[in-house]
Amino acid sequence: MNLLLLTFGERLENHYQAVFSILSFAKDKLINRIIVVTDRSEFYSFLNEKVEIINIDKSTLLQWQEPYQFFWKVKIKALELVQSKYPDDHLLYVDSDTFLAKDLTEINDKLDKGHAFMHILENKISFNSSNTFKKMFKSLNGKSFSNITINENSEMWNAGVIALSAQNAKEIIKLALATCDEMCATDCPRRLIEQFAFSISLKHLAQLNSCETIIGHYWGNKEEWNRLIADFFVNAHLKHLSVDQQISILSEYNWNQLPLEKKKRNSAEKLKKLINQIFPIKTIRYFES
Image (cartoon, rainbow, N blue to C red):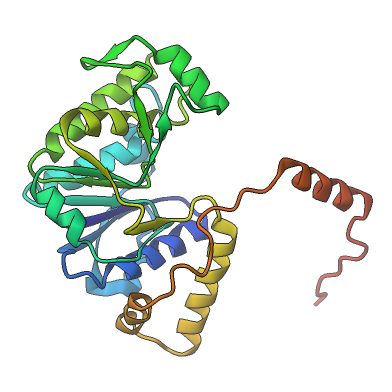
């Protein structure tokens, strides 16, 4: 099984999240190789032989978004690139804000049978109360994309994890690309089109499973996890811990110490903003040379 992460841009948190994720997965013997598709290879050089870097640039990212200039199509293209390079291996894609809490045996066993995984079933798009889901369902309901008809039972799965079997990965990725482009040609809101394209494609061509009890995805509480990760790396740097030592620490980590999701009330955020406006910072002073 090959592990794939896609990172780009200058936001440092995206890269230290990715490295933290890599270190959590590196302990598992079922991982043949760890592949990072990135335009910032310098952030991963210290991992040495632990990772394979595939360098991309801005022009590649722009090309991957064609023909509808849909940004998140780049995730599907990254999977296509790695699958074509290693067609005989299972492929496990994870977002940078993930970690491996258990071993990959269950996932690998089901991939051997041609199954597929995404992180978790979010909901049927007809049942979700969010404005984005409502607009998506209104736009896509009753329409067919690459012979997949969207209806009230069509499901949206979280794409923080995508695991594909070597048996059908090429076919699934091809279908995801086609459905993504076809939906981009409609008036459907684009924010979740790539995620929905994966959801319907994997569901159509494989038995789709969730893996939220194996892989954690802290998209709903990045603020606290980012502080934890920063503390982890500062501690590792000050103690001169090797990469192997960091992997060893994470192999016995307490993954329950922080919530994966923490939803704040809008009224609390509005009140905090109002208080900051009423009581602004009194003094700001910089060093003068």
